[in-house]
Image 1 (tube, one colour):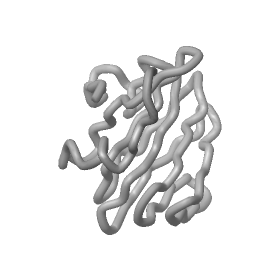
Image 2 (cartoon, helix red, strand yellow):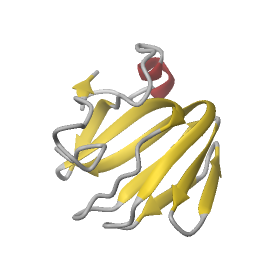
Image 3 (cartoon, rainbow, N blue to C red):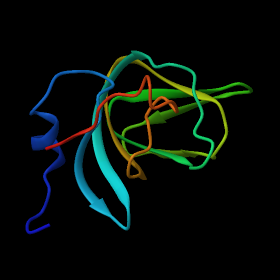
Length: 117
């Protein structure tokens, strides 16, 4: 990486929801931005935690036993193997960090293709 990454500029490059864009990488991890709206699928990642940082808006991380609400500037880590579903009533922007190649649905067959921008 040669220069600073402006996350707002990266987010302005696309309009699709639930389609993460890779903006950087480190130590085998992808750093991604994503726009979300509505409910995502229930899923789990058996071998890795799931990191969410809200950049803009508000989301709920639904777990089977509770709901964690995140506002801009707040983060939450879903432990490996815990079933969860992110939900955004209005469009929200997130920063995600996960090991390179991790399918966002927990299943490679149904995962979004991650594009580097």
